[in-house]
Image (tube, rainbow, N blue to C red; front, top):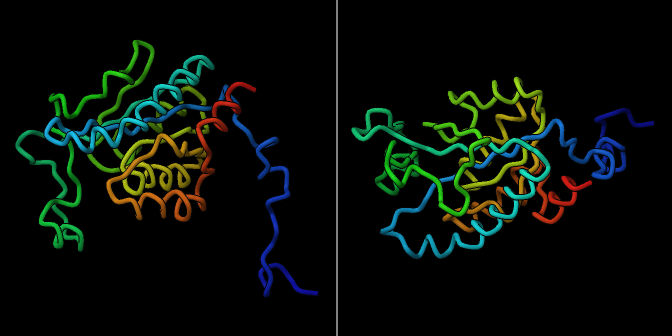
Length: 217
C-alpha cells in the first residue's frame, strides 16, 4: 500500500472543508477588502476599460453593506517628493525604466477612490505604501479586533496588489475569497494567470454572483 506523499496525490476536494456548501462565508467573520486606485484623467482608455470592474464593485459593496460585512478600502500612495517610492532593482524596472512600484501622490485625486464606490461613514480606509493591503497598514489588526478571519477581496492590479495581499493573508491564517469581476490588470496575461493559477493555491476564486449568493445565505 502506498503511503501519504509516496507517488500519489491525495484527493481532498470532496472533503467537507473544501466544499462551498460547507465552507461558505460566515458573515459574522468576513470583511470586504477593496484594493483600489483611480486611473489618472490623462488615461481615458484605462478608465473606460475599468468601467465594468467599477460596476461590479458597486454591486459587491452594496451586497456587503446589506449583509453588514465591514468594507475596508486600501489605496497605494507615496509622498509628493517620492522619498518613500520603492527603488529596488528589478527586471521589470530595468525593462520599462519606471520604479517597480508606482503609487498615486498622497492627498491628490489620483490617490482617492472613484465616486461610484466612495467610502461611506461606516467604512474603513487605509493608505498603503507597498503592494500588500496588510503591510504597514493596520488592516490585519482591524480584522482581529473585529474578529474577522475571512476576507473577500478584489482590486488591481490583480497580479500585484491583490495577489500580494492574498498571499500575505494566507501567511496570517486569514481565508481569502477573490471576486473575479472585481479584479483588473493592465497585463492581460498576468491578470489571467494570477486568477486561474497563482492565487488558487492561497484562496478561493469566485464570481460576483457566487459571492453574493454566499453572503445572502
